[in-house]
Image (cartoon, rainbow, N blue to C red; front, top):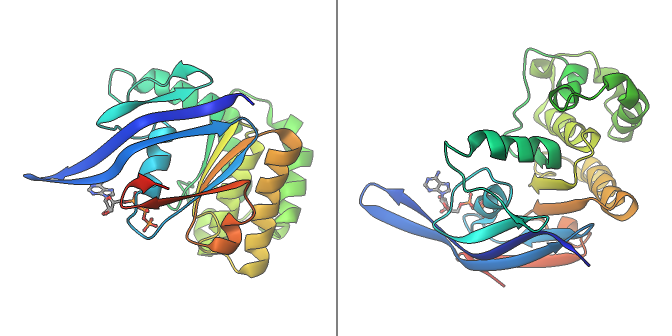
Length: 226
Ligand SMILES: Nc1ncnc2c1ncn2[C@@H]1O[C@H](COP(=O)(O)OP(=O)(O)OP(=O)(O)O)[C@@H](O)[C@H]1O
C-alpha cells in the first residue's frame, strides 16, 4: 500500500529561555493511504506536537516529513505560502481549539474551507445536510457559533473537516468534549471516511475505546513511539 505520509527520524524540542525540553525522540512512522491510525499516550507525551509536525503546522529540529512521496517544505516564513496551499488542498484539521469564527453561523463556518478551495458550495448541500443530521445539529444550522456549547462547536469543526473531502484528516482529541453517543457518531463518520472513501485519518486520543476503532494504535511514551 502507498504511504501518503511518512515521517523519518523526527526530533523536536521546545526551548524555554536557556532550557530545552525534548518532546519527540527519533520518531519514524508511515501512514498508508486510507489507513486510520490512532496515537495514544499520556498528557504531555507529544501527541499534539507530532500531529502539528506531520501536518506542516510546526517546525522540528531534525528529520523529514513526506506527503505523497515529496518532502513537505520546512515550516518557515519563506515556505508559508507553499505550505498553506498544501494544507488547504490536502489536509483537514479537527483540533482542540476549533478555529471556528464565532460571529458566523454554523453553516457559514462549514462553507469556509470550500470557499477557500474555490469550490461551489451548492454542490455540497446534500452532504452537509446529511452530516448535520448525523451529528444532531440540523436545528443549529443558522445559529451563531457563539451561542453553541463546547460539544456542539466540536461537532461543527468535525463537519467542516469532513465536508472539505481532503485526503488526510488530522484529529486531536476529536471526542474530547462529547458524550458517549456523540463520540460514537463522530468516530463512525471518521471510520466511514477511511473505509468507504479511502481517506487517511490520523487521530490522537487518550480514550482507549476511541483508539480501538482505528486500524492501528501507536503509543507515545516520553517522546518515543512504541
Ligand atoms: N509551544 C510550546 N512551548 C513549550 N513547550 C510546549 C509547547 N507546546 C507543547 N509543549 C510541551 O511539550 C510537551 C508535549 O506536549 P503535547 O501537547 O504535544 O502533548 P500531548 O500528548 O498532546 O498532551 P495532551 O494529551 O495533554 O494534549 C508537553 O510537556 C508540553 O508542555
